[in-house]
Length: 365
Image 1 (cartoon, rainbow, N blue to C red):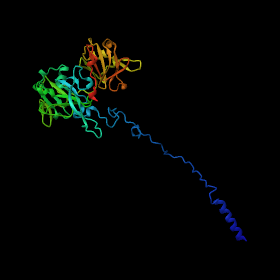
Image 2: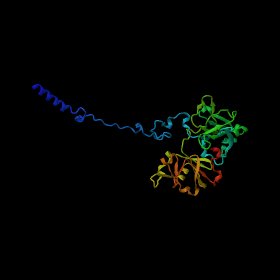
Image 3: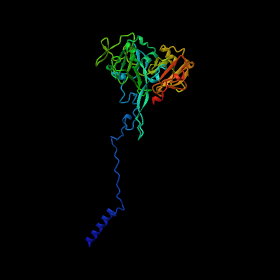
Image 4: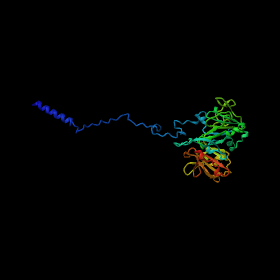
């Protein structure tokens, strides 16, 4: 009797502790006690550059934070030659940018075979005749005021100094000079590309032009095979008789000739005034005077940006015309109250007819 009572009590206790075998009463977990720690876990703060969704700033131009940014002074060789400048005896006279070409320089159109759509089931050749825009160097030199009769030599730098094409003054006045030309990678933009007959000058060719050196009164450097250009026993790494090549800046042309270069880091803040938007503004005439530009006879001021001539401002506004140079200018300047963006400025002492303004044509598409 005692045994049956004990067994019954034991079964009752087991049933009560285990609950329903079908899980009607789910077991409850008791939370563990919270114990303070002397080393609390803190979420690490990631540097913005380390975050997966972080945006790299201005990889192309560099903002001194990008991993691709390299200071100019650490660049070597022709990597320092950002813009294709034209120098006469070491003096800069222009740049080979399509939007900055002299308005007096006219293209030479060369017949060119280009691909074309071939219709199914036809005898279409799959090509057509087009026109390629070129410019003769002799025409360019004349447009910027270079007398080719006084030229000793012209040096066209390629991607490497050892690829320099050298033409003499006699070459420039010979019949082959008509084929000594350049064009641009996208016809009306891009890097300048040289073209010359195989037996012109020293016969060197390259796939682009890094700089153009013209020598009239100065002694030209000589080309040393597999080395580069040498002057008085010294290899030349910059512009002979000048120094480091010009990089950047807002070029100002007066009647198609380079007259001044505006560089933001060289502007005199003491001569600036604060505009309505809080930005520093400068007078164009102050910059011109500082660089010896006589703009008294200017009648038209053209804004050049993205390889095109855009807005025209009357010369009568020049005495009070101001500009600002901030991040919104995208490497250029903002001119006047309407803040016209300009990467270059063209001044003219005579009215320029619309027909004189370089414009893309159907052949440039």
